[in-house]
Image (spheres, rainbow, N blue to C red):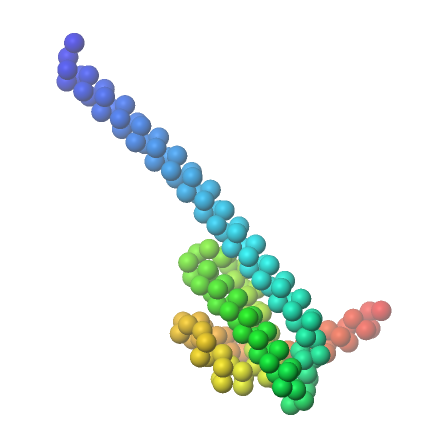
Length: 170
């Protein structure tokens, strides 16, 4: 028996084992990445749903923010400040998840639209200048500033148009 031949066969079998192990690890890594992305999507959706429920709980204050911000009471101002802070914490989380490649582009575009809608509220500018800019990371603040510079929605007008559409469809 030739020891060199046996050694070569052993090295070949070992190399096949390494290749099989690497293939297995690649498949597991792909499954893990999908699971992390799915969890990120679920958490993002749950956060947005919670914000919607919360904003409906403070509907009177939200209506004033949209149409008559000067009439907000101290309690309503607090409620909206807390809601906006939470909403932007969620957007900052989504911003960071997107930067890390964990939040897909279409969901990220939805988050960007939410920022544009909120930034279109008349009360937002004061909140952002006096409070918001000082709470979030520098990168996120710069991104929100870019979104605002690109143009926020005219949220009150858009809502009035929607209200008019739903009324005329009845």
